Length: 336
DNA sequence: GTAATTTGACCCGG
DNA sequence: CCGGGTCAAATTAC
Image (tube, rainbow, N blue to C red):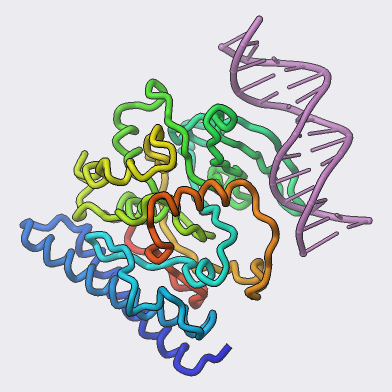
């Protein structure tokens, strides 16, 4: 890698990020008027776009200069009304379509009062299929998959491991999104509201507001499904303004029209911080363009979705490519 | 009775 | 060979 200018760009991005955070903080302070809110919105939007652009360039520079069909100029990365669309792994995805399972981790603290052991219910029904003692870790790691795996082919999985330093915290690594529909009776109505959210990215944003710690580890994905219609409610998670965005349009695009929202927010009410870690994943991908392990069925399904939903992999969002490791959206989360 | 969990064995990539 | 992830029979819970 050539890296002339890259560093500078990162600096710039860094600055922008900070600006973004500040604006975000501003936003979280109850603003007196809707007008103000709008303004903040557009600030966020602009900054988001700027970051986006810069990041795209990073992508170009570092993956392969060969003009990809999705180079920045041509692709209108999907944008939400916040303008917060950073793209995760597009460059990688572009150069080779593999490894499309979205992955992200959360840390959930169970309140000391409710000293119950298991991690809180996130609205899904999970089935434990294994547990392993992890080398060097004090607590074992538990493996869960969606209960409906076989019935509905839902490939969502999660790994839960208690944090060493603070046993009241569970690290939960989610893997894949839910394609199953949730048994309605399982989820509280309140939860269902939340369940309108479909993508990890969205969650990131949402959690941004709610102050949950989410670490996006590998948002590889051509982001499943309907990234094409990815948009965000103009701030305010006030009740149900969140759900109207995903109209039938996105639904229609689902492969097999019978699916309901494929992804339900794992976010629970408990949690606390938020941080986005840059993707440090590079190593695991070898960095080389030629790493083709035969992928699992997953790929096929997901790519089936993507193609079916016409979303060119161009428009994913949230792209944090290798950034300086301490760049974090660590914000205010607590004060909101 | 069914469904979920436990747990040791197995598989596979590094 | 080792360790992480998964399978599946046995066990437990409902």
